[in-house]
Image 1 (cartoon, rainbow, N blue to C red):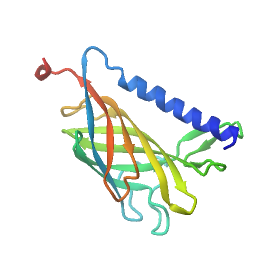
Image 2: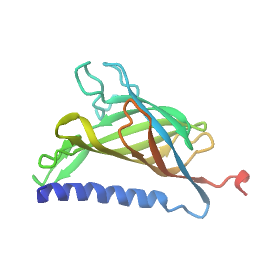
Image 3: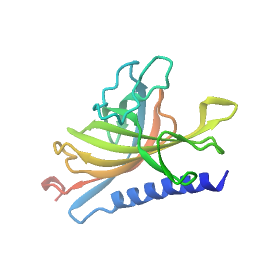
Image 4: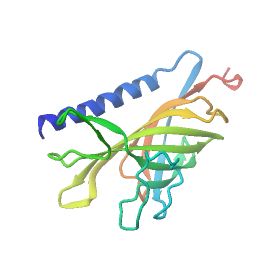
Length: 197
């Protein structure tokens, strides 16, 4: 693996760790709960992308031949609910060119794919908004079948309603959730309510 690819991966992972550490530090007026369960993504029909807000940030589902970029989500376990997700174009600093590039990015020497995504999840009467980074290690002998997939999900906001209004937190999705349930683990923090006292 080239030095520039290593640096790119370190920059992305460093940003993830910083974001996750800030999400894990709960202020004294919050209560945090560890959550675990399973998640499933099902590609939406070509030409549809429920989460797309028209900003141009989403790759979408252009044609049946293209890789799907928009999904419906089913969550089971500690966070039970449904939602939508979409692969996004996000700016990323390339240490190879010293310029800004957009995700998804394939690290040429290692073949690893870095994707970004956003999701809206309806859980416990609250809409949760997330920013996600996905690292995919493809199988060189079968490129359509990844050897490893991990997704780091950071909760960046809520709609202000329901029992998780104002919540913060993070999830790690362990595996390729497109088409089959895979585990997630994480922590969700929310303001202390009268029920918690």
